[in-house]
Image (cartoon, rainbow, N blue to C red; front, side):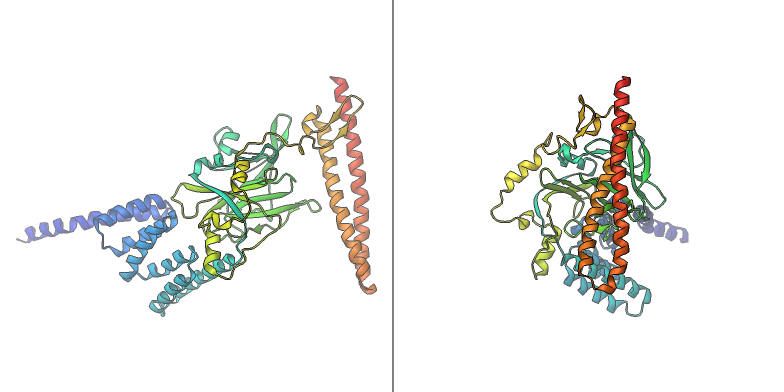
Length: 475
């Protein structure tokens, strides 16, 4: 009789035991960051046990990670009603990343009441509130950019949505540029217009990837260098793009106090110190609590692109086409909902202005411009009576080209130094007598630097010309 009861008990418990095992497998997927697979597994678990609040909570968390906001809200709301208190906390986060800050605070207040004696839980609540407050501050500084188009594509194909003019350089998958075997299938290589320099990311530490650059040496790229501090960070850096000035860099980073996943940053190379300036985090709507990356500016067309997986299914990204501002212009509104919609890019037409032909702008953005009148001649450098060069590719001698590049670099530094001198001299004239001494030393140092750079510029050009003439004569 006892054996019979035991068998009946096992039969009754078997579905629960089997379900528990499947749930543990799903939880493992979640812990490993495989949120899409975990979400599918939790959904299957919930079909078998639709009233299980724990599975509903875990489904909501997995859905939030994959960008499925609707499923996340439904699952977390159900778990909250079943008194899974953590569901209340993360429902608040879910509202915060949608910029629904009043709803988020209501959930935080409810969580605070439920967990008022739990110091660890209250500490976690404080972090979530600080994050929501930070998002709200960023929303109030949403940039007023005109977005003229958006297209949703697979993450592995998003470069197809960029239609960069040749004058702006080129983008290529690292797996193709390095002929396979690259450690990151989604890494992108940017090559400048002259095809003399590339920028890319690859794994550098256990924490993640960082940015590198290489120069063209004869027919191959080499002399690999890591872009050091302050760009290099303990978290991932990737998706570099350099403006035609060769100094301004846009890149994506999970560090530098990112608000979630990859954020977009801009920096500029300082020729005087040979280092990059501290990166500036770009405003919303360029950035969001999701992954935002691959900022590209086509100066010839007057348009730009960036990619984001905000509110997209896992594996999909939206590439936005926009008109870059010459100066930072913020959305002028006191209404938080208006600002939130602009920050989320709820409707691209909300950013449009009157008397602008966006159809024509979109056609221009979609047209491949092969050459630019402005860029037909990068410079004019007379070699002798027979040869005058206009591009680096005109040089026959690698050594001569290197000398000329050094001359151009010195010339650029000379321009910067002259500008700095002009500013210092203007400041000096308005200073009181007792404050002029320190400025005098600064001006003298800059004047010495100006003379040195001028000499370097002239000497390097002479060396480039002589070396090229020798090489031509030897042919």
